[in-house]
Length: 302
Image (cartoon, rainbow, N blue to C red; front, side, top):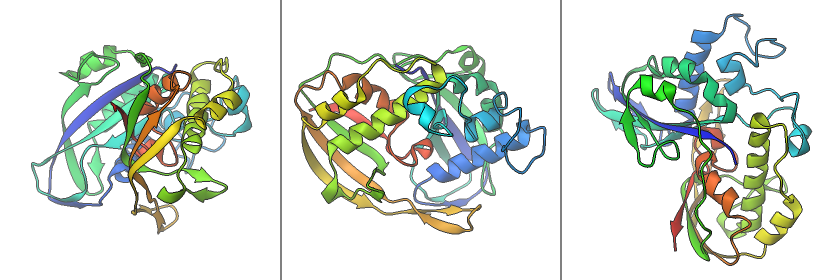
């Protein structure tokens, strides 16, 4: 459906650090600042009106422009989702110099072509004032069958692949590994108001828009029929709760609430029409803040 290139990046901290509870926003800010410093040749304060935005690693990844060929749902939006996902693999807290810290970085569709610039930025990354040393790079499925520690040279030779879904089960569990932020009627859904139909239509919209970056031809699907089918699926929530946190915004000079839903769902019914979307969503995440790792989920046999 959509090709992805997932990597795991392991670092060693060069100094003691006290890090926020959820690191996705900090990882994203650090990568964006380092990448912009290394590749921007105009020195402009932002990417608005820059004629190089389609060819610039920072501009394309962090200020993703609407492609000229976008059709269908994607044509309704001035910007498409950013073609990458950063997902922290450790909580915040107090760390000592020499401790290890890791994140997953998934490049989506055409984002893959900026892999050399990203790896260069990663090698010079700092988390705020804390220096980092890149220790290892690991290729992840679907590019490999199992997680495979490798060299930067081999990573540069790798190509994104579309995740191939296995046969759809009759029952499956969805585990929300990072807080899920879904909006309905301009409000964020709390656990008591959660419904699978909203989850699936949000996921379907994200996948369709990311697909527009890769292929000018809209996905061959009937969104209305799929949304209606999603509402027919039996959904049993398990331990859904609201996880509260906030991130600091340097641009807005304030803390921004970023709470979301954690827990799991048990789905039963005819999952086959929805299954390819649910499967690829494990790499793409879903909901607000997906680019910084929110809305990460895994499908488990029920």
